[in-house]
Image 1: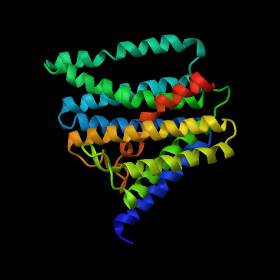
Image 2: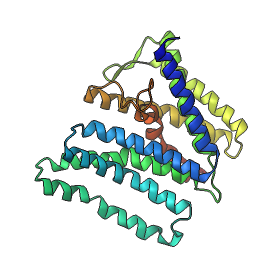
Image 3: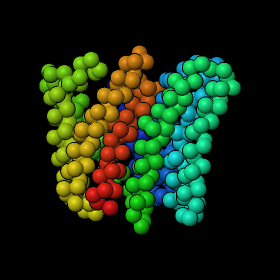
Image 4: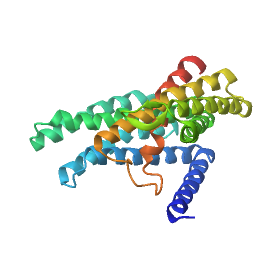
Length: 278
């Protein structure tokens, strides 16, 4: 076994164990787990859009991570009972003035490209911060904390990614979106989608809190929007001329590489959960 493969397998094993422990040992470990994942994704994203080691870019990076993680931290404190339910609106309203602080920072720097820099910070909040806040919201949306749907969505996302890669590498011939990701094929996408829907049916037999039809809809959401999310990150990395979003996961790239599909499909899954099921 090569050292590269050994590193990849070791990282994958540790990653899966940490995810399972965080998902299945209670509300607080769940909050800590996804808070760390969100922070890691934001750290990688801001490092790509603010790559200079100069003080100004590092401060922008810190502001981007701070504002991006704030919705998740605020919602976590509310759901864990650290903030009284009556204070949810004042706490939410205090978030909006903070969004204007990056403008103040750029003004003090005399930056004539302020809107571009601030736009990257806002993009991190929208693209990463809000989806992870929705993950927290889903888990605490019932009277008691429940990790079932979040766990299922992760399984479905990993199923879609894994089967799309396996089927595509074996029989893939027709490019899905050659200009963005030449290796992705229609055969892989359809194979991954079929297996993901089968996985969704299997989840419905285990986790009966959610009906079979709903699990299949969640599977379809993962197949469609998760695949789009993977392509969105691919086009972003192509624009940055990089292969991986980071190196925090040796042998696997970065956290954003691992959670790009999950992040993109979460708003759609949350919308279905809140409007149709809960």
